Image (cartoon, rainbow, N blue to C red; front, side):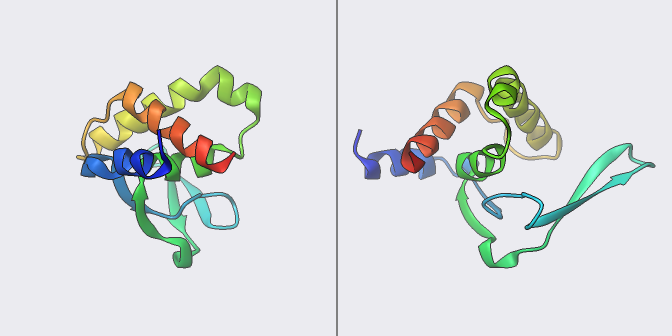
Length: 111
């Protein structure tokens, strides 16, 4: 599949496009625990990279910092958690297989 076709696939459905920084590694974000909500909150530091891009790009660029063994063992679970949290916050319920495919396309672009 040519590169442009892959990009078109990743942006064809607006549910799979979102605003974020391409990665939320420690140099671009900060986190704090909210004991009342019993959750971890996040803030963005680097607004220069904040943009609308395929959700798969944002996820892949954040997950790439994980060790291969961790991603092999928990990659599907992390994507499921993202899907559940997105839907739980009022966003669309993304399809796991489509999201996995799009993450794989993004990995392919970077290899």
